[in-house]
Length: 152
Image (cartoon, rainbow, N blue to C red; front, side, top):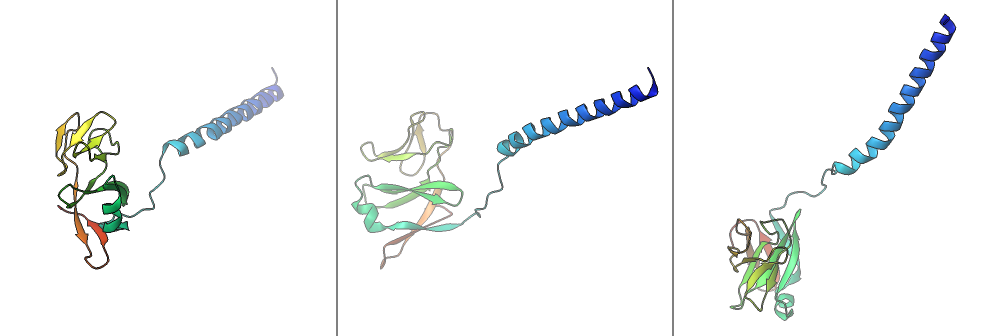
């Protein structure tokens, strides 16, 4: 083989190799961007004012509401003895959202039948830890509910 054929072959190998690398990059880049979550724009919060009032919770036949507490979910419950409890609404087993079962008088996770008492303590099922408790403050004049970090 002469020198000109080697130069052409080297150029074609370089061109094909560059094309393969460009193709792989165009396929892998979107996959990697999809798999890596974007940075969260929400800040951590220490308290939130709920978008409903005490009167709304009392008139609701379910006697509970789910709310956003920063990046996570919370649940506020009107107990049978008219106390307001606020807890994390994220089950400690597999991060499912819990709900208040007024008929059973407990907090229930539908994913694997986990049960918590109204203090957030796990009482049956697979949840390994109790739910996180939040402090509840109610403005007596307006009925606004404020939920804050800390024990309720």
